[in-house]
Length: 195
Image (cartoon, rainbow, N blue to C red; front, side, top):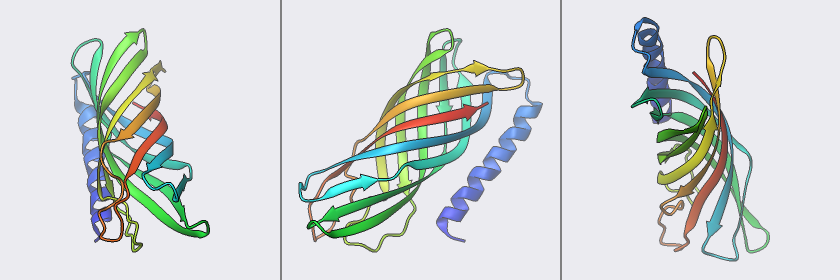
């Protein structure tokens, strides 16, 4: 099995075990759930002759949350993300970059007012897609994130829409002897979490 299939299987197994454990657990401080998200990437590249465009990305995954107190939660949200980017250079040449990645954010959520929360954290992004072009995406990426969420409580579950901004902390392009370009990754993400 490939690395991506192994990682997906591990995430599904951990989520299944966690669901059984939560069903039996009396501790209400620990919650789990699922998430779906959509995001728009914005890239800034150091080379002005290259134009970067990206399609709307989407992702899905799990949420594991624990409460430190009544107003502060820690969330661990591993998920799989799918994106496509197009780099255009020399006016007519273009490269399509498929960006299938595993994202592992660790977030701190602090209630501001009633069910409105401020979210901040760090994120590790690992690019799974194979790339054979001279411009390749960096495999290991680190991002900072900030956002806001609002919990909507229903009888049997809680839905949490979240809007966040992510900013890449490293060069999103892999090193190459052919260029010294620097590509900064940033994104606006809208997610819906069900817990």
